[in-house]
Image (cartoon, rainbow, N blue to C red; front, top):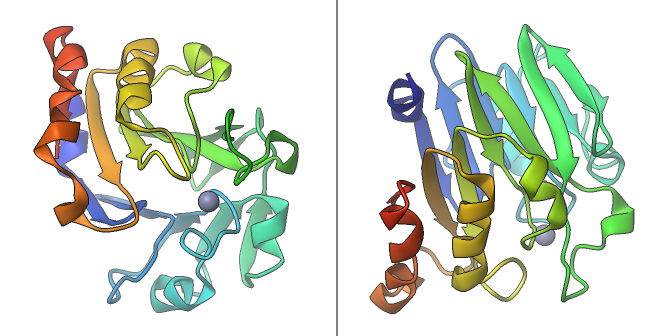
Length: 206
Ligand SMILES: [Zn+2]
């Protein structure tokens, strides 16, 4: 079941994720060439590389629902649902939970902004897109079957922190979304740090 849902998910580069089955759902589309029309677009926060009105336009229709926080909502148009961390909304029969997303040791993503991560239930499988975040205490309460952890160390958690987050989350599948530099920037040295969660039954894939 989890593997089946995972097969319907593709990484669009940076923090962009596309789920495509009966519904077409995008998370943080950025620098995409285009793609299938979106039923739902989830946008975690208003930094340009997550909330990109130009990219949204490429996949948005008059029926597309955008789920986001207040700062991003100001930059977008169409059908928009604004959520705060801790809120849950069912959109087109898809359950979307907004969870906290923030930095603990840097100031790029301040908790008070109320920016978002998302846990979306797809075919009964809970998929976690954390937005731009460090390892935060709230993660111990997040139940996810699949997690897409951001890794850079500059604006979000670094590799070692991501290992800890993978342990805390105890999800079955964990994929690293590498940031700010594309695939070539993800060195073998960094990957090796993920040996631990894999040994504990967390499957780490690229
Ligand atoms: Zn950001």
